[in-house]
Length: 180
Image 1 (spheres, one colour):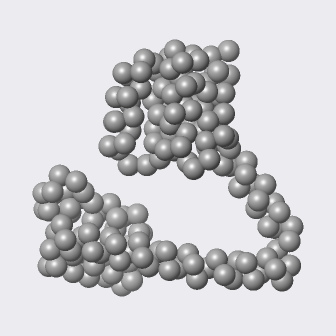
Image 2 (cartoon, one colour):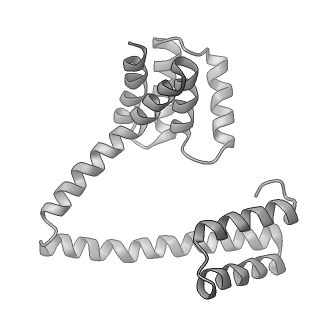
C-alpha cells in the first residue's frame, strides 16, 4: 500500500503541476506533508533547500529522497517513476501522433521550423556559458579549455562525456572557485 501512496503522491503533482518542478513543489508538499505526513514542514523546507543546491530537476530529487526514506530503494524507484510518468506518457502520445502524420506537409513544415529555433536556443546557451566562463575564469582559462576540448573532440575523437568529465575535473582542481 505504501508504494501505491508514493506513486500517487508524486504522480498527481506531476499531472496537475503545469510548469515543471517549481510549480509542483507546493503540490508535492501538500501530499507528503499534509496528506501522508511522511515529513514535517521543517524537513520539507530543508529538503527543498538541499534539492535547490544540487543540479537537476527539483521534483525528481525530492521524489528520490522521500521515496527512499518511506519505502527504501523500491520506494525511491516508485516515486521517481511517478514523477516522470506524466511527461513520459504525454511524450509517447505526442510522438505517436507525430509518427502517424510524419509524411504530412504540415508536420514537415512544423519540424522544419523547430530545428532552427533549437539551433538558436543552443547557440544562446553556448554564448551564455562562454560569457560566464570568461567572467569567472578569465580569457586564458576559457580559451585553453575551448582549444583542448576541440582537439579532443575533433582531432582525437574522444567521447564527449569524457571531455566534459575532464573539463569538470580540471575546473575543480585548477580553477578553485568551489563551484565547477
